Length: 361
Image (cartoon, rainbow, N blue to C red; front, side, top):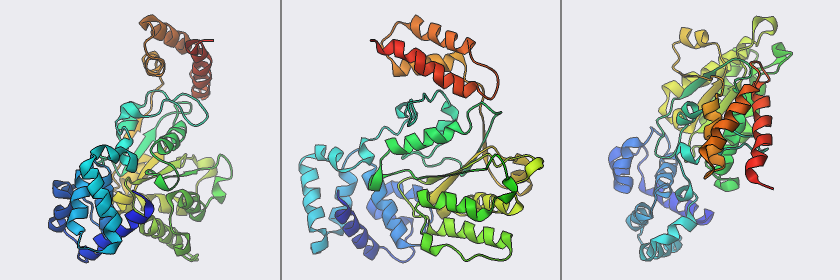
């Protein structure tokens, strides 16, 4: 299905929906899937949700049903009616027209490496918390805890790779916005800087950004409203990743930055439409701050990557080898790893170097 066809279908869908479409009306299009629909305030967002659910199905039955339901001889739908007829006659066409139907949404299908070829090992518990089609009940906010060297920031590299695997360009299904707390001069950081880090990759409408306000906390809250109101919905909620904002008191992060971050957490918690648009991943944060403000979050604690996880990675990456090769290789690598902040870097280098032996001459 090309962009023109999608826009035509969305336009006709919007015309058929009431101003505040409820579950009963949406059920006409997607059946019992309507029970999973978040609360939307605009018919266009509801229409996008309906189309996304249809394109996420393993077969074309639901899309055919929607096109047939909307078909009233409107010329704008002519090519879609033709497409539906073709899909009904040959359902195998489906895999060639929808990127959603071609993706393995299970954790088993996740990438084993990040963009530059470094291995991504283990972290099954964290990956199971991510929103995936068919599993959109993930936490609105996940706080990842772990000492330096456990790989918190490396999770960002993995999420970028996962987003690439799930579609690129106009077919991107997962948007990832990222902002990291600087290692020095934290006191010069502002909420605006963090928001502007996030907005481009979230595809937030930049023209809608708020005017600056003399009160930094008021401005921070306005920036929250901008991101939550003008980040478009998609097949998957966008991921907002905030890295290292648990800095110590020696070079303190300004309070308006915390107002911004905690405002995002509150918005995702309180508004189901915002939660449908985005989820938060805090790579390090003061849990006491969140708890004192009665903000909800899930916690994921990263432990050292052990020998069993290393062996499991080699088993997936290089299948059909004798079992002793996996365990012996993992034990050899594990014995050489330091218990300090350089551990993850050393692990990646060793796995890549030793992996050359599995690839042959």
